[in-house]
Image (cartoon, rainbow, N blue to C red; front, side):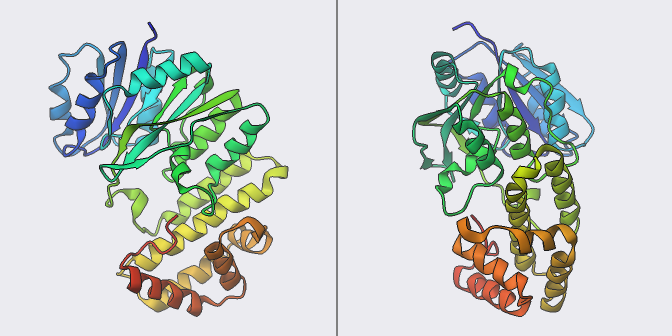
Length: 337
């Protein structure tokens, strides 16, 4: 194999983890790589650590102001020279043979995207059923990227993430991450890339280590969250056809569920205010339309219960159910998939 593989690493305040990430990449068994690192205005010592690796001429270090992970990845894509592209997050790391295995499979199967299994929480293996998706099944897989039903195999949650995969450059083309979105940005990017895919290959070998950092923006409640959901809604209405309205509702339902989960786990807001915020949410047109028009037949039990309670404005009951679950499990993420 003589293909150049570009590996993109966006970095922001990752001084605790970045060394392990970069060393796992530069020590790959497959040597013909370039590592495009974009530091997104880190305020810690991330840049100082990264500069120690500039001796390796395969590394490109780009320093930018803080504009978010989507902008950082877009900057990196423009600088990539490889015919194959991979993504890694700064707090994660790769198995030593990750690039070699993924590239081998991509070439031998002619797959435009290859997805590997991964490790979660240090050593928990998440294996994927080895299979190839092509032809008419591509569209079904494409829709799963936007909405992975909680009744289905939770192991496929990584499907909507860009890490743990290798992409042929040709499927990305001029597609870029939406810089106005920091929730579901990977899924929307992948959904758009999938229109250029004829063959998607899953392999069961675990090659990527995913580290869940609880303090990240994806895991906490903030009052600007609804702005993000508005941006997601606007983007989906642009890329989905009228025939895909139920898919749109499913994604908006996930936004509702996530909002409720994070709101309920946020201790600085009182019960009365939480109920008021949920009521305000359900009164907004896009969420009201979702609640009353989504097809509930293929939803999970908890999704059906949530829809029923919201539709009938039983917000006090919803609050009590959430708090009971929170008390029993000791977790704030009631609706975690």
